[in-house]
Amino acid sequence: MTTWLNASFEMRFRFIGALTVRFAASQDHSDHALLLSPWPESLLAFEPVWWRLAQRTHLVAVDLPGFGHSQRSDSLLSPRAMGEFIIAAADAFGLKYPHVVAPGTGTAAALFAAALHPGRLRSLVAGSAAAAVPLQLGGMVKDIIEAPDLDGFRRADPRQLVNAALSGISRYTLPESVRDDYLASYQGNRFAESARYLRSYPAELPVLAAEGHRSPSGLACYVNLAIDYLDFAPAARSTR
Image 1 (spheres, rainbow, N blue to C red):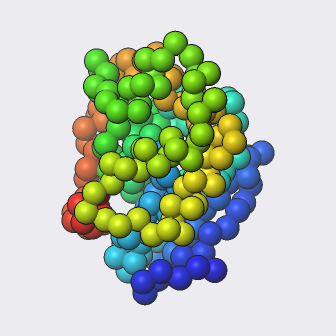
Image 2: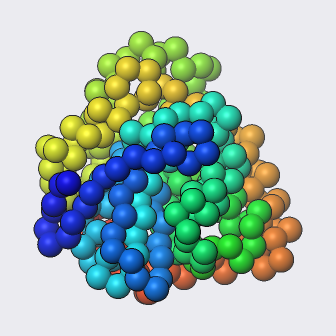
């Protein structure tokens, strides 16, 4: 068990379906929130706000398959498929009507989950990721999506790639133990393989927009409704 601030933050592994998934959970409360780690980070990205959110909400943070320290499945390397996994994860943890906090790469997957399973999620906090159509890209995500292939990323040192991505974090000093976890998360070929998920955006996000329009109440009802309740936004602004 590892302790930060005033909270107990224990990382464990369990099976969800056939995959080994890393997660952390706080004490139980009547309200629940599923926290999906951004890329190329891990569930430790929520460490700075964990103690605040856990005071009144049951938190379950998850490294999505292929990200952080969770096992990869090639069949889940797209937002639509990952959206179905989010629902499976909520079921596995007994989260009947959770808030979902999904920054970065979790955004598109969480939006698919909301569109394909209306009423399953209580609310969705999303952002800082490509989710609009036409795609609005920048930085390394743009480079990955527009590259002819991933050979250059496979040949590169994944530690340098992760550190380059983390250089955008401002107003927060990343603890070395957390940085080490991020670096370990994407060692070997894990960085390049996780980038395959990003390269599915041009094909999948137009489908997401169509699903959102077909959803009975659209997606707007989900996005950002949890901000005030979870008090996530002020804490997030203090760390990014």
